[in-house]
Image 1 (cartoon, rainbow, N blue to C red):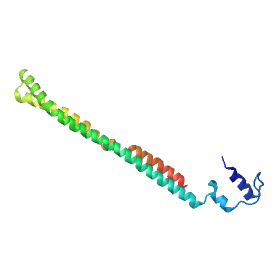
Image 2 (cartoon, rainbow, N blue to C red; image 1 turned 180 degrees about the horizontal axis):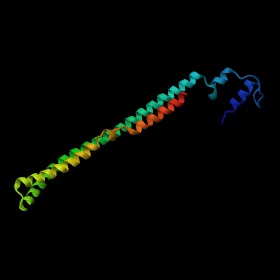
Image 3 (cartoon, rainbow, N blue to C red; image 1 turned 90 degrees about the vertical axis):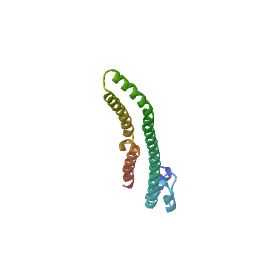
Image 4 (cartoon, one colour; image 1 turned 120 degrees about the vertical axis):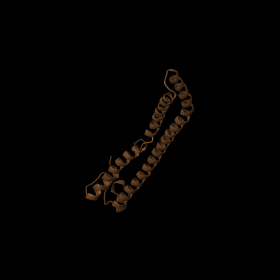
Length: 160
C-alpha cells in the first residue's frame, strides 16, 4: 500500500488539491520518503544487498563443504576399518577355506590360490565402495552452486 504522505505529496507537487495537503512539498521531505530515494541511494542499497547475499553464499558454501569434508572423513574411515577388520578375518577364513578345498581333493597351491582370489574380491568391493564415496560428484557443493546460479539471476534482475 502506498503511504498517504506520498499520495498527498504527489498531489501537491502536480497541483491537485488533496485532503490534507496544501502548498508545495519540500525537497527534503521527498528525499526522506522511502519511495522517492535518489539513484545513488538505490545503488548503494543494491550494492549492500549484493554484499550481504555474497556473504550468505560464503556461509552456505562453508557449511556445505564442511558437511562434504565430514562425508569424506567417514568414507576414509570406512575404507580403513574395512581393511583392518578384513586382515585377521581373512587369514582365518583363508586357512579354513584352503583346508576344506584340500580335503575335497584339490592340491594345496590351487586351494590357496582360490581362497586368496576370493579374499581379494571382497577387499576390492570394500575399497571400491569407499572410493565411490570420495568421487568428485559426491563431494561437489551442489546446493551452493545451485543457489549461486539463482542469486546471479536475481542480481542481474536487480541491476536492470
